[in-house]
Amino acid sequence: MNELQRAEYLSVMGVVSYVPRFLLPHAPAPRQAELPQEPAPESRAPEAIGPAAVTELTVAVSATPAAQLADLGILEPGTSKTTVRAPDTQKTVPARDLSDTPRTEPAPAPFVLSCWWLGGELLAVDSREPGAALPVEALFNNIARALGWHQLPREQDRLRWPLAENRFGPAASAAEARDTCSAWLEAASARRPVKSIWLMGRQARDFCAPVSLENTINDWKGIRVLAMPSLSELLQQPERKRDVWQLLRQAYPEQTRAQ
Image (cartoon, rainbow, N blue to C red; front, side, top):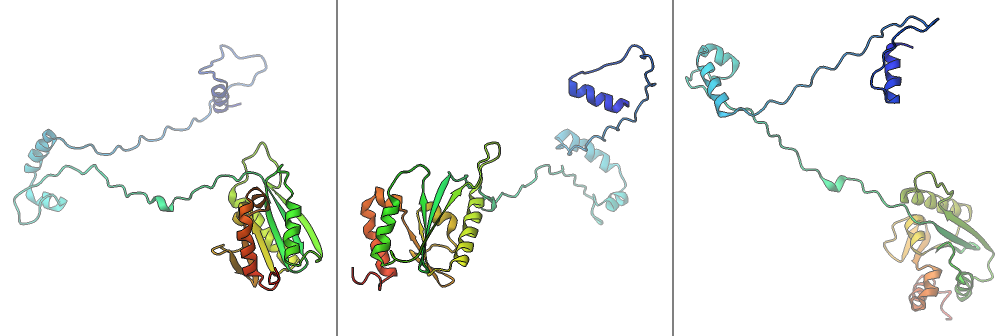
């Protein structure tokens, strides 16, 4: 072990200084390592020149020939006056534009997306809180029956976020949830083409929307994308069912004509 490694080990162990008194038997002879040279001291910014220093500098300049002062740029050619200015030590720092600073979104709370396919008509994505015991399945069946879709072939799936629990790592960000859920929706619609997609609830709208939901009925590659309250919200706030039914009558006039 050379001297440099030994000094590093001692500093890590908290030993300030250690010098062996004698050489142990059969120990190799110590050798001095080339220690790194200390960096050159940084140049300090010039300090402001006070009145006394300006006076001394003026006297020194007055004793210098005018030709040399003109060559140095202190005295303008053809003039006899010498002006000495103190260096400007204040620097103007441009104001930082806070609008360009990226804002970090908080990590979303865990949520569950329940999905139903009704033949080639509908893919419904419903936001559900984990552990909430509400009869959302019965409410969805009633909506499908009102539209005449209750006899269509049905498939069901579920997506949990986060995909895997990691107690020792950072929580999954909102951007990761948006990328994962939107990619899943695009793959699901490509695997089972449908005419309409319902995004029900805040999580479904925020993380699964393939387009900007500027209206309640939006178009995405010829597919109608509807933004609606979740089934849990409709069960907890029954007065919102009227608005949902008006939306369905606007989107599906033929299916709701007899209602």
